[in-house]
Length: 148
Image (cartoon, rainbow, N blue to C red; front, side):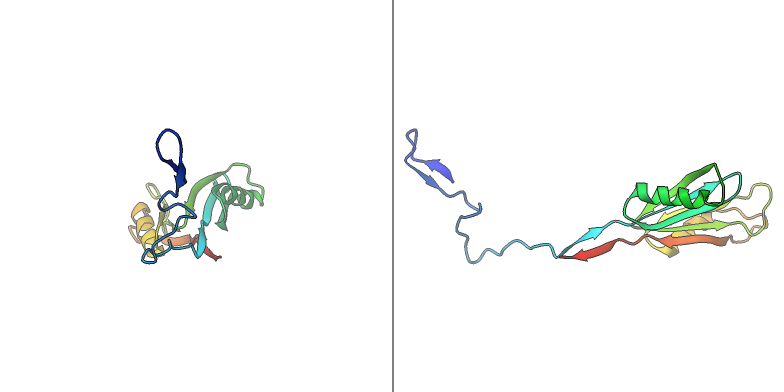
């Protein structure tokens, strides 16, 4: 409501569109949400000294995904595990060279689809024989929908 009638308030009128105000029968009600999306997180942790790896997927937060990956990496005794990648609501691919040697490197990528993630990871990977790299780990952290 808002005052009407000049300096000496003589009455109140409804604010158009406010709750309690009469609405036209032609005006549709605003849509109500039918649910809520929840993010999903994944993470990869790696130990350079032992080559151990820890992974996490379908976690509810970045922090939770990183903690889980670090814990899994350290389970066999690695003391130098570090998070090398986190991803949310995306796919992740890690490919490694089939032939290891000078100048070789693995490739990691995240993308909306697994196909895209694999393609991007292959572009990053360098194999000693010049061949395509082999898959090492892949995952999709897909969001979930909770209906109301």
